[in-house]
Image (cartoon, rainbow, N blue to C red; front, side, top):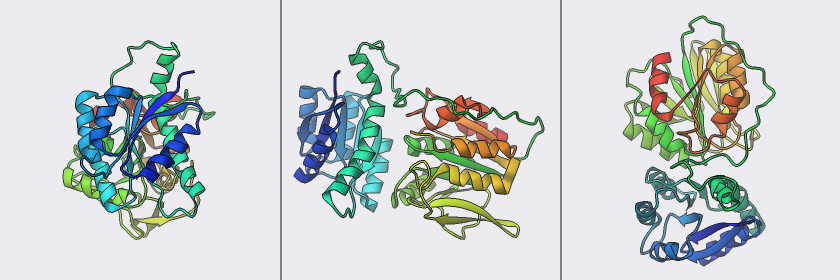
Length: 363
């Protein structure tokens, strides 16, 4: 079986060795080259023809953003995973990289107590994403699918099996939407920007969002979206009161829930155990939204790996709410929206380009 060929680009010898050791510990992966900066990386790409590139954000001579832009001029489809420091500068640069065409990102080990913990951290973050993004390439090498793959299309790592959740039959009575609840992961920052920049300033309901991201990154994402959108986008904080025309993003490493206090609905954050290996988790937010707003919840599931949001969507449907999911063709990964659609919970499946209009029309 052919292995996935990876080029590792990082200015740190220690990091290059750590990433190489992690990747080569998997029988499906092979590191076919390393580079200390972008210039060396660009020269090596044409020599070794990698299936995927792991690219450091901050490097001397030619940094990750410059290198990414040069790679995308040559090849729009090769997966590029940014390897970012868990810092404010790293978060800002990573979000910029995603807007320039990076496929995804992982964060470098931070404050790990041992070398093994650092290795495990990289292993858990990086390897599943590599296999998801290179699934088509592996199949082509095995002769299992045509070499003519769909442009800019990346699939889930394994076929999605519908869960044993009975389809919810909607009561055919118009229900006023009181809140829009969004769950998103891989490919999320660009998807959120595409949707939120179309939401008008006088949007009459609040928006609450779980985007799977670490601390610092969610704050920078909120700031970036506020700059680009007509509505205000804030990082969620305990005590924050939901307002029409304001979007709240769950902070990294904290679940975000909604609570009713008198006539106001407030945000509360907590560090209870992860769900679906995620904190923040979509299921946590969706359950709390369904409890407070009932049939007034419009749930939206966008691109992302895994199945976070499935049980939360089930809870929204039980309460009489509605669910919209992003379609496969416009998703970076059709994991989260795909499993909701396949479980019969979605009222509509629409493209990313149609999503803002769909939300506005329903509200």
